Amino acid sequence: MTDPTAPWPTELRVSEDRKTLSIAFDSGERHDLSAEYLRVCSPSAEVKGHAPSQKKTVPGKKNVGIMKVEPVGNYAVRIHFDDMHNSGIFSWTYFLDLGRNRDQHWGGYLEEMAEKGLSR
Image (cartoon, rainbow, N blue to C red):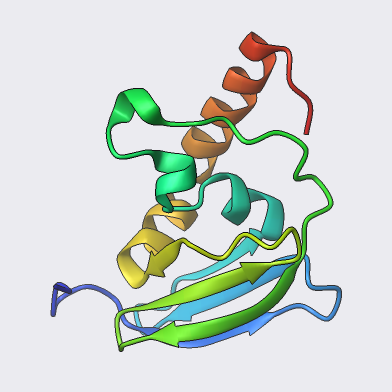
């Protein structure tokens, strides 16, 4: 269920090089999110798991691209990445969280990668 007071998307655009997804909201917010960031933060069970203890750190996605974006109802989209991952459903509120808290999410990801000896 979506929050009727939350910002609503007005534009969703994949860059020509397929490496960035831009999303604009009726609040005036605009977030340019890299394909790599979206892929490693995918809300899919493959990445998030079914419990916090099952969360996975996904390495080697520095060059991933976006093949297509398809609507899921009126509340989200499914992103098809060129590594064939497509099971995450990105809600509008999740996009807002990713945009507003990018430094926290990305920093945490980079820390996990370093702790595990993995590379982008």
